Image 1 (spheres, one colour):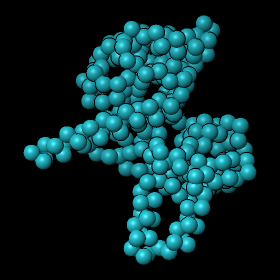
Image 2: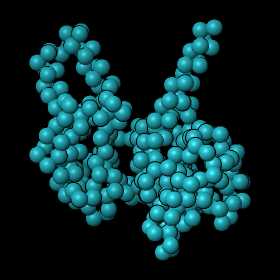
Image 3: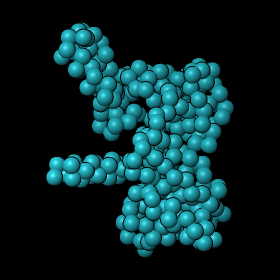
Image 4: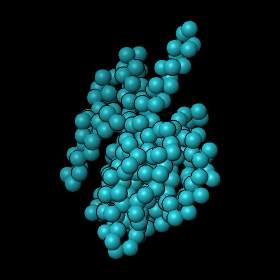
Length: 264
């Protein structure tokens, strides 16, 4: 249950529109709902602002549909990550109203929200075209949180002029996520050019010596650009949530500054 729904329920009880018994029935699955094969964290959105995400590998279509159905009882939007096309087709047979986002490899249960106009922008950048699936996973979770995003793809260090030609675009963003495989050098370059936070995502793109993403991961951890946040290999989801935590802090700070100006 998210904060808005819980607040509405409490206000309805206070106004006599909902009986305590009905409210208790609504809250019966807090703090988690036990489905036998999964214990769904009903408090996740109260702590983090977003519903629990379903990680698809290792789960059957029936399990994914059941978890999504339970989460949808109290959440307008639920996302299942890392779903291949075959698994998604089986899930959609059980849950026809869901949609499959092929580029992000995710199943979406519910409608995506509108973007908040005027909110801080998050840049999502890739070194190469092969890094796009990880970037699109990141983008989907940012868009699910109503965050405005900018894409900038295939601007790796092998042709650094492609990045430099778009610096003015990037500077419109408050936070930048950079997805890169191979040598993993792009986040260091971006980190040295950008003022705001930079989140580096190593991808498993590259030849043998990249060790399926380990080489770019180590490059990013050893970046000369100070203060870069590094997430795990191919973890677009983790990058999105790191960006969201930063985004919320920036938005809160901006709101406080605006309130102070209005007050004076």
